[in-house]
Length: 121
Image (tube, rainbow, N blue to C red; front, side, top):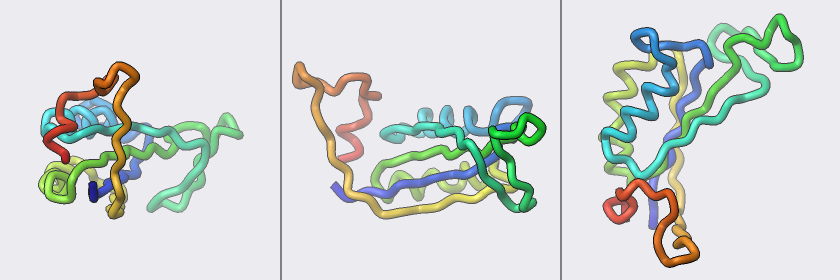
């Protein structure tokens, strides 16, 4: 299946109404019925401020980069973009076309699936 991968890059300390921004994005993606979302914490990076944040130096280990990756059909991902635009202030979103492969669980069912996988086909 052809799909679209959305990767949102934000800071670990970014918030939306006193909640971590990455958590808000994941919960909104879930509410929107997207196939899945994962959050990855970076060990080093910089953003619009050009300040390098790294986990190697204790004094610079605050506000590490975070990437939220969402994959679904192009139509569903693009429909989610207005929600991201509403809550991401200073950040970056990348869209990449992807080929999506699904591997069923050992018993033939999707393990840990959200129940939305069929909709994403």
